[in-house]
Image 1: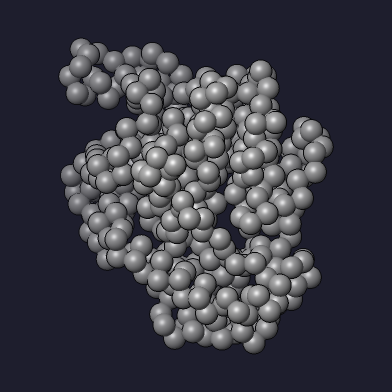
Image 2: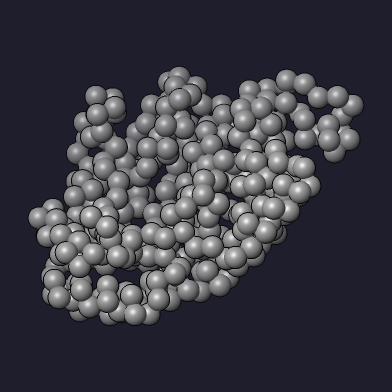
Length: 380
């Protein structure tokens, strides 16, 4: 059916095509030009990342991370089962074994207290996924990484402009805490470029090599900066950097980041406050934002009490031409990885796969539309 209210609608600030035209008119369409530099410098300065490299997707950023930490056959990587396949694929492509954690009972993010029992002599990295832009407990994760000499790669696909306050009282942007971090600018995210992503490099050991991997395994960027008199193939790599057209689109979005974030957070807060009593009466769980985390307005979801209730709620919304969608399927039960999983039950992961439902959440929802969505929910 055709939905009057979609789940997502990409927001355009109005300058995207202007900047794309500007990029075209300069004759520089391949990557690492004016707009790539504008975006990378802005994100580095605003959030304090060590180094920023735009990529064609968050998937590419994760694959770069796997290359940087030299993932090899036999290495083990710990991550949640409740995540997108790209989180796992990046490491499986290098030969790693994925060891899945369950989700928390109060949030779809990984159960940080279950990680240590999964660490073995083969473990090389932990990949926390900041689900819905809400931080994992990074103090616990970084302490384990230091204790066992592991890398931490933050999957911050949904976490732009979200923060974590550590036990030391310092408030830090997500993606700036782990050794490496991957962001997404896919059309469903807060800040978009159609497809697109970014690798944040926070460990100085990886900064030079990250740029080489980004440039197909060559020291081409150093050559253009005049640091070497010629460039060649010096390492592994691939074509990870995006075209200037993607970067130009992204720059128009970044210029409006504060306005976009203000509107999205306001929509999220309205959902949460108005639906509180309704959810409680229906046995439905609303999103939790821990005291040490912030909410960036990426996603508003509800967790139904069972699969049947979620199916009924989807159909109720559908009858009113409102599109709501569920999210990840448990990766440990996927056709591809089921036989490779160690057969531990991950009950919370399965619960979120069966019961979580995402409501329409995008910048251009007007007040009338938002009130209609909430009214329809309250009638369920």
